[in-house]
Image (cartoon, rainbow, N blue to C red; front, side, top):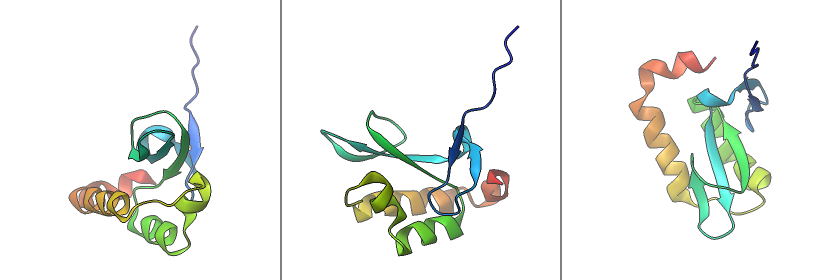
Length: 93
């Protein structure tokens, strides 16, 4: 009998727990720098809400969680994903 529970992760901006499959994963890889979604290394998770992305950027939550500088290109990629997923933003809650 397999009673697997969802794997929960905390958003670095709003501090709420969510199933990790609906969060964005930002990774600090030891070779390639900061990656999105795939890779091994220190990870931080972020809701797919505009308010959480703005909070993370304003208060440098990803920088602190990953213990490194997060390039603007990674933040812009997340912002473009947010804009392309406008109808499904409410599903993240």
